[in-house]
Image (cartoon, rainbow, N blue to C red; front, side):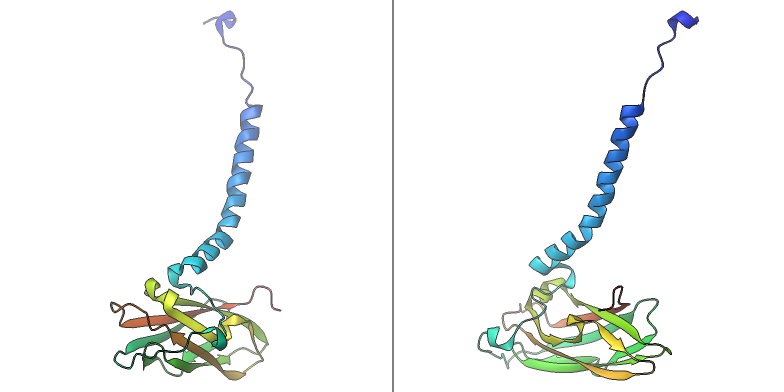
Length: 184
């Protein structure tokens, strides 16, 4: 092939700019997915998120406790790396009647030699039960600060709606504890 028959060199500058813009859009979309996912999960009660994390007792309809039925509720907790705490439910499992108001406690202890702020993130399973699990008061509503060696009992007051389906006989409330990224 002679030099006269070679195609002219192509300019790829415009293509490179478009690809970089597309990468930037995907990067921004990835950051937007986290709050969008949390909002969607809270709205539909998916992935163990409860529909309303904080409700007031006066907003509850008159309780119709179903004494003919009992539900088993288990409590678990997980500590994420970087949080030198010890946490355990004082009642790992309870039985409750649908519509019954109940309070349980978790014991938390800071094992380090410095003050640490942590945050609990709840999850209910099976996920269909999350829309029926109502927390009236929970340590997960705000960040918790523990001084070195400090121990504290933290309360959870909740109710499980009486209209929870008959197919649900047990549920689990799990807390994942994280070091607070921006202690307030």
